[in-house]
Length: 229
Length: 82
Figure 1 (cartoon, rainbow over the protein chains, first blue to last red):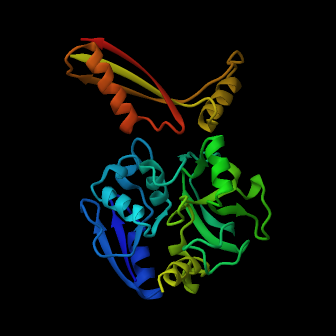
Figure 2: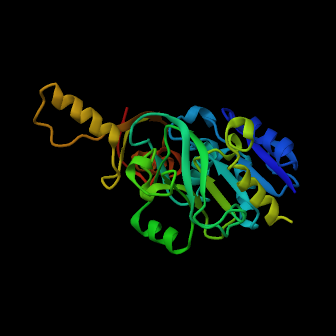
Figure 3: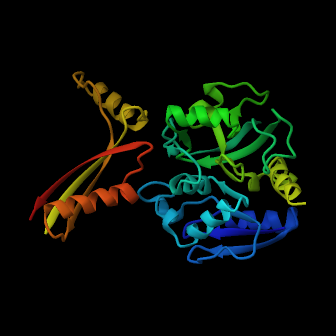
């Protein structure tokens, strides 16, 4: 399996993703410059975190018009995996590969801390290595992570099992005090209907090695790898 | 030439914590008569267009493609010839 990490001006988690995929997960990995009109011969596209185009206008609003995004959309339509992390998730929302939009955190503050996630869908290609309901500890770092969509879309997400992760307590309880950004129904990660596009605000690349205090993110990379075997 | 003023705000159905915070701040300054407050974005644009209608339709297209996210935002436009 080979992964490609898209680099936008202002991406800042691209190298972390590259390091984890090459040195920890041990797969082939390449950078894809945002001006490229092709993603090349790769299986997994990663849209990394950061502040593409300075987050001007709205997070991800400018990046979604980068030339590479047409290639990313084609890749997704072929049923191949696309993972958007943090700013990558925001870009997937702006480009319409995932439904909904991001609002400023309810607290109006940038939040950077470890959170707990409950695995809501353990059958997608991003979560096969997880048990249904499994709790993951993964850090977030964002100012605009309040997931929002209209009522009808929300019902569709629930009905189609498109909510991948929700923010919970360490023991898996739902509650506003465990929701770091005011996301609707505590949503932390969303899949497209086909299940090959995942957007998540938490950063699995920052929690894939014990030296960083937690390896839970590794299970997401390993799931994708397993789906490709 | 035309001058356009575009106001973008969060939809009524979307909570606006920034607006709430500003509202509370104004109330604490003694302005108790505020009913509601929403914070938004304002764009001012000068553009060339072949007639008012064309200017308005161009701006509508710009809002649809980039300036506004219809999932969470709504907008109003004023266009005048300058």
